Length: 325
Image (cartoon, rainbow, N blue to C red; front, side, top):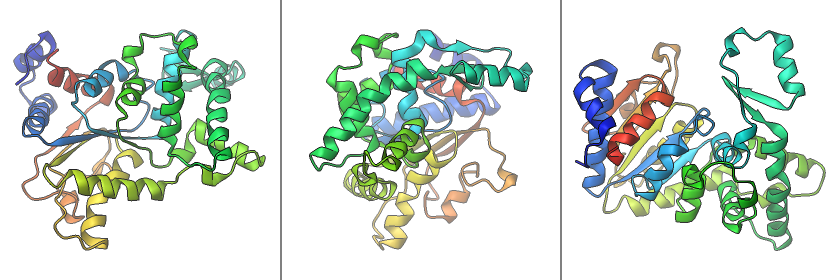
């Protein structure tokens, strides 16, 4: 395995049982996938960018420990917001005790709360809005169409945001991804803040919906990517949280195998999910891995792990193991 830094050494010494042991086993199996020459998809649900996962994920990207990412629109934009407005964020450790009036006061101050962290609307959303609108409009005027993440890449690589940087740019996973042109899939982008802003321009007649490539186009692109990249190597699936970020991309395999009748399509070669979902509630994304066999997503022999824990704690530890920290 990679060199064992102090974090990895601590995990190997203390994480012997239960979810802790699964964390180590899943990390070792992830590393084995890469050693075999397989590729890995990481999916990001929830508010992992606001949780500053970029501190470890950006290095994972730079060190080729992940080959493709699927994320929500929120995670796509919130990493960039943290990059340009970090000093304006406000932490609210007493968030469980806030009254409705206190929540309203935060809203009036332009502080949109995500658990214990408030994203500053003016400095984060609005700081990006004029720049991304220009990129959207320029593309439309040229008759060009791109995916949501491609517009974000254009904005980051143009350098227009450098004047606002408030964290070390090496801790931005989106910047690391843009510099590598890492493939990203963003299902349901429309429900993000930038998606809402884009919709508002369409309602006002300033932009056309067709300027933004759609979720169906993301799925057809992913089908082509999976087909090409699984010919000579397996593709693993590392799912952080649940929801559309995981449910959307994992379905590309049964779609290829069943709907397109490409019966030579290989199953995902590895599966791990960090989950806090309750399986008995009928959750798709919280289902135990074996259920995915019945849907044609995983094979009988696919290495399968589920770590039932807090992703903000677990994901950085898995990445630390893979990075030899």
